[in-house]
Length: 193
Image (cartoon, rainbow, N blue to C red; front, side, top):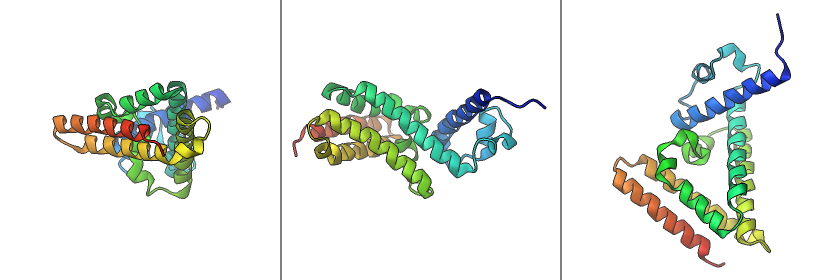
């Protein structure tokens, strides 16, 4: 029996995390069983345990990976105040709302992450703080710590706004919630401490 090389194993693991990440954000962590996740990746259930110790291990990995990807996007976009505004507008857009599987894990999974084991919560905390600290440094380059709490508040406002907009059946009202969220986030960003 031929053994697969390290590159093949890494590519397979990445395929699992990418497809499972989309499925989690679309159907929820609790609503996604291992057999469904592996079928999405085109693999058998048995292959799962060659890559992850448990579903909790997979969730922690995905949360960390997704937030790292979000941080990379933010780092390339939020290079000045105009970039931060662009992030707010793109985050609170109908396109993001209507495609949760391609979007932010916070807006799609926050309630479930709160019920996850400590390893997942730590991966989430580390990931969120990494991009919060980047944005705080853009907003207050000489004293980023002074902008950290405000940046966390803006992020919380954005996540909650996205969750509410997704939950509303009235499309016009859902769009208004997004528009107001943009205005509120930008106003908060413009306030001085």
